[in-house]
Length: 580
Image 1 (tube, rainbow, N blue to C red):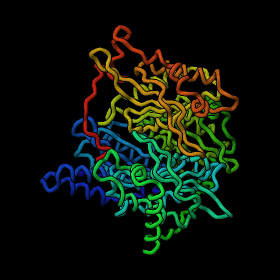
Image 2 (image 1 turned 60 degrees about the vertical axis):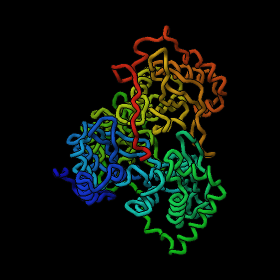
Image 3 (image 1 turned 45 degrees about the vertical axis):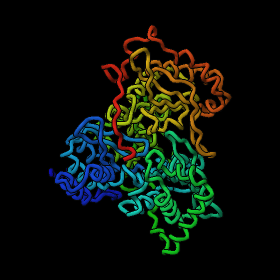
Image 4 (image 1 turned 135 degrees about the vertical axis):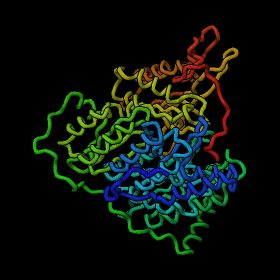
């Protein structure tokens, strides 16, 4: 096994990795090759270590857990080396704050994993029937709307389940998100557990939600506890997971998520089982809350870079308007590096790592919109920060705008995907690039998934797109289901409503019409999501009706070719590993 790239352990901020995981992987692979493990047994093991199969034979996708999205410059340099040495020169940020790398050969999985684990990150339980990466709001601790920083509590949950018996071997995958603000900024309402920070009578706690989900059964999570004191956090999370272990459907993976348990037994029965398990955990001595890591403070590791700040360079104003937010701490701001389709090259990772060591607190956070956020930038250093970001090609003023289209990997690599979602996402983003829209319309979020699983979270987008198939004559054509009005707020999750099924290459025109209708008809101060929730399904269907109609005579040759492809569109049925 080749040696992982060197890393300075003094630069590792938080350690979740364990190089013994890579050594164990080699041992289990050898057992499989000797016939001591069946293909199913090895696949279950492999997935629990973050190693996914791709559409392409003999290569894997590696998923790296980044708990609460926090990553250091040193860790980015390791990922850059991994990308160059064992992948294809770039990585991909997901909507659950992970990094993914594709086309890793079987022989390279173990050294890749060893490098990741040595960096302090981990592949452990990044896939399969496990407690997945615990997602947190990237603005936690610096946002004025949150009563306290939830990051340390997210870290405690991560450590409680990571490599623990209860954290794997579940009936299905299990997702936990933790939000700082009442509007549920981390979208816990569509997760198995959603936690929203609260303070009552001066005491910290969380509103605890459970059993949300999207895909083929959309459900907004139900309230398990209106106010869970922080000292009960680990006890309560463990009780919910125990109930899922006991009650989850292990016979039918299509109906195995926790939301299905509630569909079968009913919420009141489920809550009773939760309270029973809660009592058992407490009777066993509970799960005492370890010492909570301190909340982030202003960085003190470096002096100001210059006593005479740079004047704002060209293009700075547009970037700052879109990609910068003032922190609640006076004198500091956050800045977002926009990653097109969530991708970042190895060269950009290295440049960004250098940037982190000059500005902010030495870390970045991956975001739910597949970007990178830097916190604790001194306001007077924002122009210099922008210039540095510009040099590595990550300074476009697009983050969290209508042009910041979120997409899953789609049929480029995923076995379950129907369409190349990245292709249509790029088409939309490029189409909107030079359009002049109102500030309100700029806030329209668009998310694209290549199949019903909804990895891009299209179900909770103002405009959501889900890949599908239609037959025109004797040939197949890629199309997208268009939904409107999805989102998450203080009232939970509202799921987009289907208004059209439109051929892939007509999607930009559909987006144009929806945005134009918003511009014309929205109420003062009405957000796009609220407008599209208010718009009736009938009005939406009427607006897009003709775009959904397609006869052989109307079809062009390119309509039968998916975006990003150069061959006729086909659908190859493959056994996916999302439910393995």
